[in-house]
Length: 394
Image 1 (cartoon, one colour):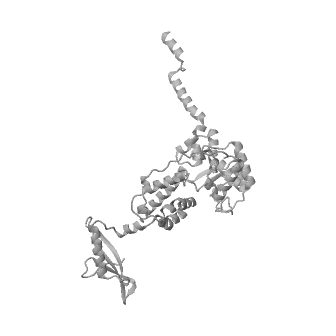
Image 2: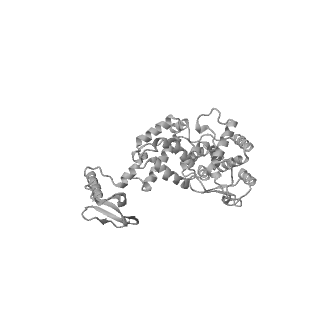
Image 3: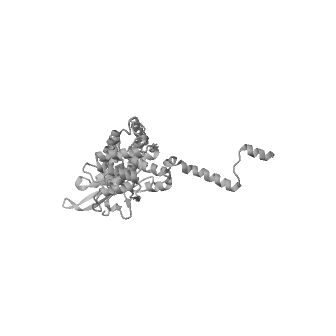
């Protein structure tokens, strides 16, 4: 920016000449006013406008007097703050945040849908500065009354929290995030349902009859513990048949992990025609692959009747049930929880702990080990009360 030049006889009025604009056969001038805040002493600059737009030193000086009066009565706000107050939640989401998610999130479609359904109708025209914790509490209540689950409500609130955090980080807005002053629902959505061997066989058979690729996708999930998005993201470069490993690169936790090629997974790979390294294992011309697979899976599950009369979401069969089944089968086969957690790519041990009830023998072993240690230390078997009493009086 060009240096500001003071205008003689007009205190606090300055101008900068334009290198491009012309006005009355000379460089156009942009007028500015400067003053110090009475309370903080901080120098403030306010842009008035161009001479070609009608601004004159006299008009700039009147503007300076108005700003000084606002400062005197405590009503002055810097231009940046005034601009921020006018930024609406909808304008920020449409122009900045949603485009950013397209380039930086793995699956932005769901967040876009949630924004359109729940947030845009309520907050699109509301300035971010006026978005309050009470507004979000009302949103929580409305979503609950509409029958939305705690998990869905939490997802929607997370969109608001992350969007406003980005606005602050990008310097587009200053203030506290209203999401920091509300409580987020804590969903209890741990899956309890897993498939028996017979149910898994019936499901894969029905999927194969409907679409062979759908059955192959489900097989890799069931016998590899992969999420749907992880299966669909697999590329031929991730498959190393010599080592017997598929490298799952696009994971939910962004931490790659190996899946070992065994039995059913090897059969699936033998049925596929290898492509170029960057080609996905599974391609479809039926729209978004995750949407196609989710709809087809639900249709097949409904036709089998797995979810008939089941209202509790934790007991219903979804595609994610296949991953849950993999973990459940592994634990029941005696695989340690820690090892199962590694296979699933869990970040914390608590995420795998939900399967502990499926390994009662491993829990029993802890009690047996303590009993053995006590026996070795005392050198005798535990006696019943009658035997102990007879020894005391013997």
